[in-house]
Length: 559
Image (cartoon, rainbow, N blue to C red; front, side, top):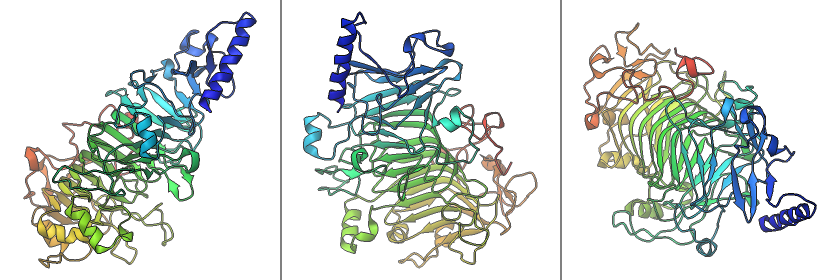
């Protein structure tokens, strides 16, 4: 289709030359045409919109006032950007607050669903495919609520914002029309990054410990639209690179692009550790904030604000590290701070298969460090006075053979209190299920040097070998405090028994109190505090949206 379009465009251009027109072929990338030559607004007659060469045809966005518009002839779900990796498509910062607006989905690189076609195309690892660059301070916005963004395997995104000038991906309703409330969601789909990392949805030979895992024809269907727009992920290279995201924000995501298929803020599908992700935010998302389907990408300095489902979701054998993560649920909506599963399609596998996956290290084994979870004890829709979109507010659920290492975490429901539904399975702070219970007994699952202050501290069965309750096991390596059912202020302002936070900032360890006494735990790895961020070392400042009153659509509910 693309080659036919290029030939048609060339024929038209030749006709123009015969009639005295210019010889350059420039396809105006907007469904309703705008004259690029005249520019508009602050562009002063120059088109600063992104462009690329497609089989001899230059495709370029169209100037519309201060904005750039990209129609489906520039890119769409079935018309991906395909360029040489050495010649990326660049989205520059536009003057006067201009926004890059897409009339369809933004897809980078072609999708492949079999090894033969991928090899013929020369796509074997990150960097072989197409690439885009997004400069600091740039805003990309999607016109359609069911449009989204995909970086396919082999292709890369380099979105390198800066403190004071983050890259923001959002909707036209937000960035241009200013018609979105602080906690509105589903204004566009979300971002999908497909990598060549390990996902236990595929079959492998070898083991992680022996560093000899191998697979073939590993092509797992990603979330998103089916049919011609279907994309795939997976492989055996956990060091794969899909580019870099720095000071990068996604806002108002999660539209249901297919039935029962709401996209996350960002889906990291088997994304490898060669990808750099630092200073990342998911703001007001309908489904999960970030979800890891296998792979080993590391994420540092992550902010999740007003995520309605899980702020951090782990599955399919993810092995990366999440370091410094601040999670703040909405006052009346939000499910789990961390939901973590070890094996994809767990319920369909028999005990022998599950054990084989564990023995070969194919189950998820994430590391989560320096985490703050401010959980609101919300009810689930359908229950009396229910307000939550998904399940009620909860801290961490670890299940289906996930063996994480969690250190320096601060998890609390203190600000909101526990809304009772007559069932204590709701509104807990820590719950371990399935093979994780034995892993906790054996030391393969660790939660250490953490502070847990909730009305319902734990939930679930006792550990099978030692017979310990989950609470007794937690208390061996962490400090716990049972807050009042109605909630209580966890700041030093009014509570001598519980002093752990000042807003969302962790207090210095020397100033903390639990049950009126100083904490007994010591932060791991020589860190100076427990949790994600302190007022004296505020890495969220001057880029993250919604925390600072000067850069927010609404005040934080507990402030």
